[in-house]
Image 1 (tube, rainbow, N blue to C red):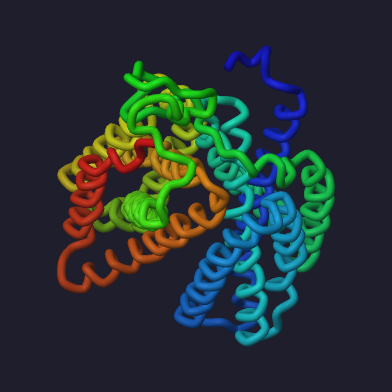
Image 2: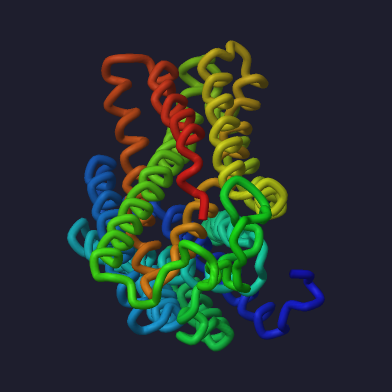
Length: 423
């Protein structure tokens, strides 16, 4: 669909969903940049902090899992409004915490809201993508990355100015509530979720191909063709369809698990790998994460155009192969510039895969799009948590660089299984 034919209200909805993703990234970054000050204030040790972060992640998983069915029942716009308001209020909690217990409660509430917002705003993004009939999902995720970057800059500037965390987080929360009030009226209501349709660019391995059967404007087989499903299908067929749907969701979740595992490993271990493997300074080692995050953000901004040209399956396949090549370069490289190139390849390769998976999950049809996405989200998010921990355990018996063979092998497996992302 050309940009000239896109309804103005849909453009406003797209801008509102962009704002939701950006807000999510900003508020998460505002907590992260204040971790040192908050841990000093609350007397939390690094080991205790790791437990509290795990608690926050667990609460986010619960929020994701509950948000899917709730969004299907009440509409994702309602869930976006509630979740965005919740994180805008609870982001102040860590700044007001006085000890480990109060910080734990604050992080659990904040994490729950973050998880619920992740599912509900991605559900909105899927509906907007349907209206555009072309890939736009990766751009939403790019805005989250851009928001996190902007939030880190604002937080760093506030700390440099000597502002207390409570003041900065309070201002961030008030700003979040204002943004939420402005964006929610522009989101799609429940009528936008009732009749799923498939974007025109999705059909197996690439852009729309000719098929033997006719299809309507939603991509549904014409009932006059041989093999079309009778509207009065037996209950056994319905059960079979449910099983197939469940297998598809689990398969998408596994692919998301692998890609987010690799992303978590790169984000958490890239700097340390460079410092230990190449014996560089901490400043030089920090360039590894910079190379990874910069190319990932850039890749998400361009991934939609690439997906429109080659299709989601090829996007996941070749992106995973590029990421695997990046890990191989990092493992084999004896030079800093080549290692940085390897981490940059990882970021670029991993940039577009996860948005394609979430888009596929939200376009499985039926009335449970948000529930399907929440299941894929939950499985994938476990990979984001498990990856860094797995590498940490492996470093007890093998060098860190050697442990990177795990994400290398898994991304190769993901490339082989990319057909799962077909619609």
